[in-house]
Every structure is written in structure tokens, then in C-alpha cells.
Amino acid sequence: MKEPIIKIRDLHTSFGSLHVLKGINLDIFPFETLAILGRSGCGKSTLLRHLIGLRKPTSGQIFIKGVDFIHAHPRNRHKILKKIGMLFQGSALFNSMTVKENVMLPLLEHTPLESTTINIMAKMKLEQVGLSGFEDYYPAQLSGGMRKRAALARALAMDPDILCCDEPSAGLDPIVSAGIDNLLLKLKKAFNMTIVVVTHELESVFLIADRIALLDRGKIIFTGSKQEMKKSDNPKIIQFLERRADEEVLDGDQYLESLLNG
Amino acid sequence: MIKIDQIIAPMGKDFLVFFVHLARISKLAGMSLYWTFAAPFRGEKLRWNLASVQIVRIGVNSILIVGIISFFVGLIIAMQAAYQLERFGASIYVADLVGVSMTRELAPLITAIIITGRSGSAIAAELGTMKVSEEIDALKTMALNPIGFLVVPRMLAMIIALPCLTILSDLLGIAGGFVLALTNLKIPFIAYYNQTVEAIVLKDFITGLIKSFFFAIIIAQIGAYQGFSVRGGAEGVGKSTTTAVVSSIFLIIIADLFFTILFYSTL
Image (cartoon, rainbow over all chains, first blue to last red; front, side):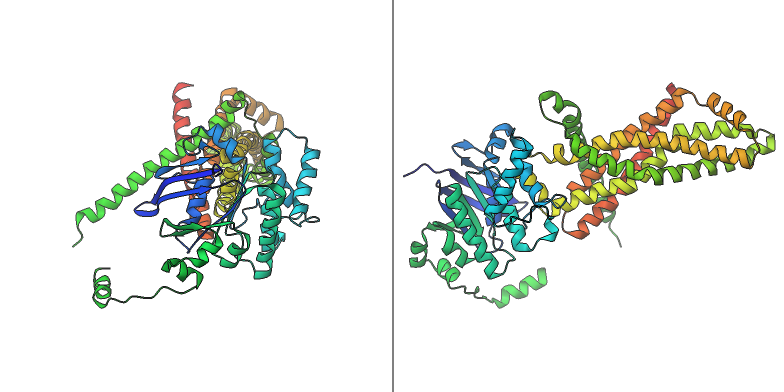
């Protein structure tokens, strides 16, 4: 068994009195694509934000490549972050810069390369995501799918070992989102990286993921392959796979009480 | 019947919230000053290319509006002064009044207030929008410090541009006084010029510039702080922009009072 590239141990997080993550334990292995699947609001985006250092957990540990990421010295943390690419749900491209400048930014800031070299590298990355010819466009001039591709090019700028994607197909039509899925598959082969995808889209998960982790109410209730997931008899997994809505349980007395005391 | 704690409790809460804001602004200001003045000596680079873009936006693009307003303020002060001084046959002292009040007080203050409205609000809105669209998070995940990357260039630009604009405002305010003296008061050019040069000492000019240096820090810091603390969408950006302008102007006046007392009593 390979040593995991990301190890999450007993991770807890609360927003005020709301306990969002309740003891997450998860191993992510090198060169695999792990999909973190869950319902809206179950804490999956929050979990991802911990992996890229945007949130500090209440307690627990995250090891990335063996380094305690949360308690590491900022210099070490930055070193790890430079090798993690992040694709945000809303793309998060810098609106004041052109697409090419967006891709060039991390390279200009973190590498000693000359700007002509960086220029060529940025053009190559944009070509890989199918955006050649759009280098000098501003993000506002692009469609949603193109913005996602541009954001992907920026996330790949530093040749990351780990790529984190937050809802890569959110807000895109099925054809464009299938395009993004195929692109992820292609890029994974080309760049040889570990991909962590947070999503609730089942089709996309079955297409790109090697392994699936199902998050429910702040806990991981299942990890395994697609086949294992399909065979599972856990009612929550079956509900998720069959896309069944929650059954509404109406308790008359409780409802009355909530109205009176609300 | 209103219970007394219903009145007292919210006041106490506001009072505490005020100190929370104060602590956070101080922290941001401390970090910005560190990244501007100390970090470059530790091998971190200052982004002059980004600062120069901001100098154009904050400084160069405000030259016309600051110039026109200062000229008219100089003219207005001269008219008000002449109205009083003519009765004593002391119209020539209009030169003293306009020169000293512009350099010591009005030029730094007017310039700071115009720039708050023009650029302090822009800083808050720009950073606020970046926060809402996750651009600031994106910077962090690229291991780029949002303070070094966004706040420092703006503060640097403000520290350079505001004193320059204040000098411009000094000159045009005095020019406004000149125009009134020449046309209305029939004071010869050379007499008014000599009177002005004699009235203004270097101290007046320098204290004005010291004020504008601190006003620049206030405008940049409050704008950045309000931008970073945006919550929610477009409405949050609007609220923060308003708060940035109002609280900057308030703090500028307080700082002005402080410096005037300091310079008045010691220098």
C-alpha cells in the first residue's frame, strides 16, 4: 500500500455553535482521483477549504506529503501551497487581468523565469485547456465554461502535484460540464497529479473518480470504489444513488411546539 | 414600559464592537506597515509596478478635480477674509489669511476628503468585490499575501500621491486668493506676492504635508479594511463602501484636530 499524499485525522470544525465537520478521517493516495460526494451544506466545500489553508480547523490534523500542514511555519506552508492547484466554484479569476495575465501571475511571483519564458508557458497551459486564441480576453468577456477552463489553466500554472476542484461543473450545461470532466481526465494523465473533486454530480463522479468518499452531516460514511458504492446496502448511499428526496416526517405536537416557541 | 437593560445592553454591544473593529484595523495597519517598510529589508519585494498603476489612478487622475476645488476654496476664503478686513483697511492681509490657512489646514483636509470620496471608496469597493468573487481566496491559495499584493501597493500610492496633490492644492488655493486680490481688491501683483511669501513660513507648509501623510495611511487602511470585511454580495460591497467613506472622513478630522493641537502648542 502506498503512503497517502494527504492524511486527514480527526478533523473538527465549527462555525459558532454549528458543528460542521465532526471528526473526518481520510487518506488520499498519490495519482488517484478522489471525489468527495455529499449533499449541499454537508461540509464538503469546508473540508476542501481546509486542504488549501483557507480555514483553520477547531481541532485535528492534516498531513500533506508528510508535513503537518496546519501547524507548519508559514514558509513551509507556502511551499506546499505552491504545489497545490485550486479550481474555485466561481472560477475566481482576477477580473482586472486578462486570461493570460491570470495564468502568468503565479509564475511571475514564484519562479525566477524570464517573462518571455513565462509568456510561452502561459500560452501552452491555455492551449492545453482549449483556450488558445483567447489569451488577451478579460474574464468578463468569456462564457462560464471558458472561465472554468481558464481557471483550470491558472490552477495548473505551477505544475501542481495536487489539484483541488470545488464543484467543477456547477452552473454549466451538461455538454460543457462533460467537456470539463474529459479535460480533467486528460490533464490528470498529462500532469500525473492527484485530484480531489468536491461535487454532488453523480454522473461526473462515475466518469472521473477512482475512489469516492461520501460525506453526510459532517462525517464520512463511506469510502471506496464506484463498484463498491453501487453494491452498498447503506440506506443513505442508496438514497443518494437513487436521487430520492428526504421523506418528510411530520410530528404534529413537535410542529405545534416549534410554532409556539419559535 | 421599556426595561433599562433594553437600552443599555445594545449600547454596550456597540461599544464592544467598536473596539473589535479598532483592534482589527490596528492589526491590518500594523501588517501593512510591516510589509511596506520592514519586509523589503528581509528580501520580500515591493511591487512598484502595481503601485505605479495605483499612483496614476489615485494621483494623476485626481489632479483636475483637486485643482479646481482648491482654486475655488482659495477664492472663497479670500472673499470672506476681504469682507472683514476691508473695514479695517487691511485688505493686504488677505494674502496672509489665504496662504496660512491653505498650507496649514485647508489644502491637506480638502485633498484628503476628495481622495476619500474618489479613491478610498474605490479601494473598498474593489477589494470587497474581489472578496465576494473569491479572488482573495485565490490569491491565498497561490501562496500570495493579499496584504503585500493588494494593500501595500495602494497604501504606497496613497502615501506618494496625497502629499503631491496637497502641494498642488496649496498652490492653486493661493492662486485663487491672488485672482480676487488682483481683480476685486486692486492689490498690485507684486505687493500680494511679497505679502504671501512673508506670511508663509516653511513650518506651515511642512505641517500640512505631515498631516497629509497620515491622512493617506488612514484612507488606504480604512478602505482596505472595509473591503476585506465585506460579507454577502453586492449589498455588502455597497455598505462597506459607504462605511469606508464615512469613517475615513471622521478619522481624518479627528487626526487633523490632534495634529493641529500638537503643532499649535509645540511648534
